[in-house]
Amino acid sequence: MKDDLVLRVVGRLMIPAILLFALYVQFHGDFGPGGGFQAGVIIAAGIIFYALIYGVTATRQLVPDWVIETMVASGVLIYAGVGLAGLLLGGHYLDYSVLSHDPVHGQHRGIFWVEVGVATTVCGVMLKIFYMFTSRGNSEG
Amino acid sequence: MAITVVVIAVTRNLFSVIVLSGVYSFLMATVLVALDAVDVAMTEAAVGAGVSTVLLLGALHLCKSQEAKPTHKPWLPLVVSVSTGALLVYGALELPDFGDPEAPIHKNVVPRYLENEVEVPNVVTAVLASFRGYDTLGETTVVFTAGVGVIALLRRRKKNPEKKRDET
Amino acid sequence: MLAHFTNIITVFLMVAGLFIIVARGNLIKKLVGLSLFQTSVYLLYITPGKVIGGTAPILSPQYSVYSNPLPHVLILTAIVVGVATLALGLALAVRIREAYGSIEEDEILTRDHHVESEETKEPL
Image: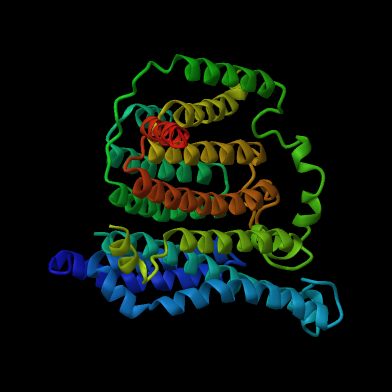
């Protein structure tokens, strides 16, 4: 499909826009619709779009397997880590009010890191499942 | 949406079933926006019409089949489904009217959430990440487990070609 | 009756999804039916949350009546868990296809019965 001119041009226009929109949805999750889940799925959809146009092998070189596996695990660890940080700083587990000098800022920080963790895990899992499905067909006889 | 569902039930070509399920997800996302659920609509559109359709198409490519003709008329499932539906409608007649602001669902915890102690305008994100953070932690773990499960089911071990040669 | 129109639509979608799961033999179609069933449950939760005259639950000084945000939170989690279930179900279907050669429920059951009857004949 990478020989088709229309797809290549549209891909070049849309994929950066998709990734940028995903970042917008992630960081403006506090002020408008959005948040971690939506951003993770939109990033995964953008990369799958790239894989549909340029092939899965090119995508595997761009985003290797070890990056995705690290993303999957580290998202959950970030989330649990924020909870532990609350515990270490004197509050309850997953208590955000103690994370900063002021409870409101603490909540903002806690919500920010938690959403980053969620987006990382969701994006990693979606991409990993996509890779698994496509590589299974290729190695069959 | 009802028409889409009936056509999905009847069609035998699996590719059109998958495309119709994507159409259904988009229609559902539109209905959700009409019901003021903007976060949910965004997630449903991205997940249902995007990732879910891609995964179904990937699985169809690996399975490569067409649905066979059903061998017997589905009278018993039809009777069971219709009777379950009738029971549910009978139970649903007691529910509060649509859009009623005095319904009990709006009374218990929600006024406290809407008072916004955390000064985050998007109440859904605030509830998800702060008021009910444990649920979101559990849900992230579920997604992680699903990823690990798919890896465990579909991983190809590198030693397989030699084992297969030994078996044949 | 008109006030319960939304409930009737939701129940219809739910029953249609249930029918697809029970009455069709193809595994992939069953999984599509399962996801349709889950989607109708999302409607079941969110419809009572809407307040006529309210707006989306994003706080802003211009509005004073909001729709209920609590069902939105629960359903957001449910959607992502639903797609995780779908992915696992599809992985299982792919493995079944490799092991049995087909994904029709009748053929799989017949092949299981054949294998069972062959295994019970062996000690003779």
